[in-house]
Image 1 (spheres, rainbow, N blue to C red):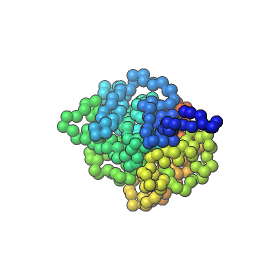
Image 2: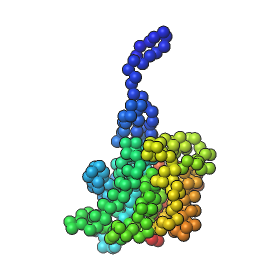
Image 3: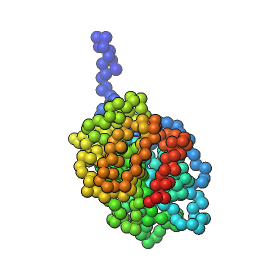
Image 4: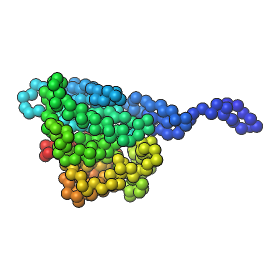
Length: 329
């Protein structure tokens, strides 16, 4: 740096940050990307030993792993096998991981309270890997389960306790978007997954978009946990170059979904979530086309309230609702 005529002049033209996401992802002016493997918040991991877990590679080509969870007493009990519940993490397609403690803690709780095998897959993140990469990875994570069900050499850790005929696919935010796109791709009954049988989907604050702003987006608080500026930044970094937020993987209704036969869906959103109106509209349209879709809104709650405060009353009520949804289907 040198000073000329009283003005500061940068002689090095060093790269500078042009985009940043929650202190985890930094995109620089020269196109380089610096990504932290850990979240910017400090959350202790609450592993009390009541849930067993392990990591498995499901896509060797991209070294993608998923984390499996099961109640520690599941192998010793004589009752029927456990349902399988996918939990696909959020993060605007740009950040997040199965290894983050908030994700880990929520999966511990899901395994214990749902009495289920939990599968928490990672997926390739943007902007290094823009959509549809994350959707393809979600599909591969489900196909991995099918391979386990028919393998000659089965993994007793999973196969001895898991009921492959009772699979539920859930996702949080961007993970909810992935779950929706899997529901569209697989259709009702998912015959291509046999002997796997998907019984339903749980979309937790699904991350949908569109070029026309919804009322909740336009009027939402600027200091919301997921505010409009951050929503638009996530889309700018994750949508394919040259596309808009009406891209079909982003805006569910940029093409007609009326011909799609969906398995049962539970849609959950916070009343103060800027994405609320999109989730409500999604539910209404699918219901009008004859699909079994439930909508649950938690008054005053922010985007992702169930992992931000997983032991408060709204999160407890949600856990009970998910359990009822599994028992029903």
